Length: 380
Image (cartoon, rainbow, N blue to C red; front, side, top):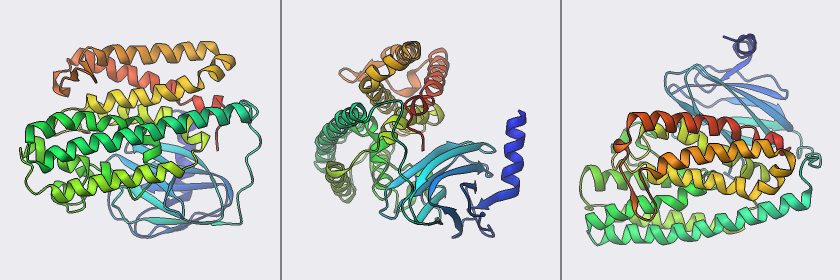
C-alpha cells in the first residue's frame, strides 16, 4: 500500500460519517468523510459549509457500492459509482446552502442527509483554460445531441413496447437491443434525474427482493420477462410505465441547462461504467445483449471528446492522439462482434482473449478520460 493510501486511510478512520446506524456527523469544513456499505442504513446528518466540498468515500462493505449527492430539486449533483469494497474514492462538489440527500450503498437504501450552511456557493472563477464563449458553444452542441437522442429514445421505446403489447415475443426481443442505444449514449445526463433513473434502468441487484421486488421495473424487468421467462404476459403496466418515464425524461431534458462539468466528466463516466461493471455481463444478464449497451456508451463518450476536439488539440495534441488510439482499440474489438446495423452477437460469444483485451482497453481509456475535466479547468 502506498504512503498516500495509508495517510488517507488514517484520515478516514478518524473522521468517517457512516451511512448506517450509529454514525456521527462529520465536523464542518470543506472535507466530509463517508463510509458506505450494503446493509444497515439509517438516516444520518453530515455538515459542511457552502462552497467546494471534498467527499472522501470508503466502501466498508463487501459489495460494490455507490454514493450520490442529490440536490433539493431531486437532481443528482454528483456521484461516485462502482466503488469496490475497501477502496477510497474522492469526489469534489460545489454546494450551495441547503439540505441534500445522500445515497449510500444502493439506490434503494435509506438515505442520509447533508446540511450545507451558508448561502449560495461562491461563483467559480472564470475558466482560465477554455474561454467562456467557446465552452458555451460546445455545451450548446452537446445539448442538441442529448435532445436528439431523447427523441430517438421515445421512438425506439415505442417500437419495443408496441411489440410487447401485441404479444409478439420475438419482435420484442429483436427490438430490445436497439431500444438501449439512445439511453446509453446520454446516460450521464439522463441519470441526473434521481427519481427517473431507477424506474427506467435499475438492475435487480438494487432491490432487496431482487427480481421479485415490485419496485423492479423498466428495461431490465422487461428483459427478464422476454428472455428468461419467454413471455409478454402481464407486462402492459410495465410498458406503459416505461413509455411514461421516457416521455417525462424527454420533457425534462428540453429545459435542462447542462453543466459543462457534467459533459466533461460524462465522457469518463460512460467508460468507467463499462470498465467496472459491464464487462462481467451483468448489465443485460438475461438477454446477453450487453454489446448493445457497451457500444453506445463508447459512442456517447467519443461524441463528447469530438465536440471538445478543437480545444484538446490546442491544449495537448499528444493527449488527444492517445485518446483517439484508445477509442480505436476498443472500437476494433467491439466491431469484431457486430454493429448497430447488422446486430451484435451475444456477450457469451466474446472470446476470452478479446474479453481481456477489451477490459484492458476500457481501463486504459478510463484512465485517460479521468484527466479530461482537470485539463479543461472544469473541476469543482
